[in-house]
Amino acid sequence: MTTETMTRPVTLILLGPPGAGKGTQARMLEEKFGLVQLSTGDLLRGAVASGSPAGLAAKAVMEAGELVSDEIVLAVLQERLDQPDVAKGVILDGFPRTEGQAEALDGVMAARGAAVDQAISLEVNDEAMVTRVSGRYTCANCGEGYHDEFKRPETDGVCNKCQGTEFSRRADDNAETVRTRLSAYHEQTAPLISYYAKRGVLAKVPAMGEIDEIATKLGDIVSGLQGG
Ligand code: AMP
Image 1 (cartoon, rainbow, N blue to C red):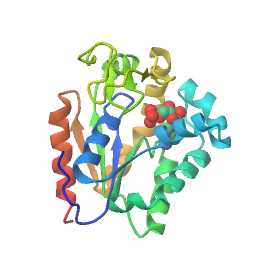
Image 2: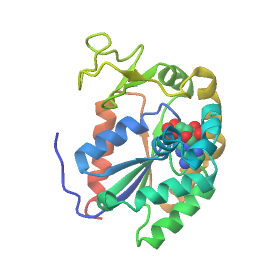
Image 3: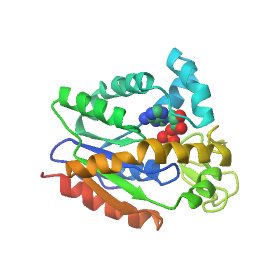
Image 4: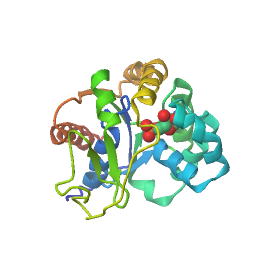
């Protein structure tokens, strides 16, 4: 694992439908550049697991594959941004998801004397996403990702990375809910591609290929932001 030193904090957004690889790529960038992955989906799943009022309000909406209210999402995001480890910069994964959230993010960033440096759209085919998302699961101990078809553990039932034997699947990773989430993406989130293009901070990266090749392309983009 290499950690390259960033010369200034950056704010990077990963855009793409469910299954595009935002989480996988964000974790790789996190390791390589010391940035912090900030996934509103993970934060909301944490709130659901803890039984907090925000979690209780979000649970059914998430299970249906629809979008949680801006009020709840912004509250969990702000709370996370107030923690000191984000000082090196963040990779936003799953946020913003609507134009309203993008505008709210601009306000949050401006209040912190920062701005969105780069939005990257991971370009994939929808139909492949249904298969990708329906078969995925993770190690309950270390979070390593697996897939029923594409990436099984080397030893059945044992995590390659930490030897854990417990695995979990997201409640919303089933074919029916994935289709609702894909529709939500196209209707509400895809317009953000032109929102960030107009600002001159958008990059489109083809993301149907090998994980490592895609990671190299994203790494080049992030390296390019270092001085700028
Ligand atoms: P994800 O882990 O990004 O696939 O998100 C899982 C679910 O959490 C989504 O289907 C939504 O229900 C909810 N969610 C995550 N991020 C947001 C957001 N920025 N705005 C609204 N809902 C969100």
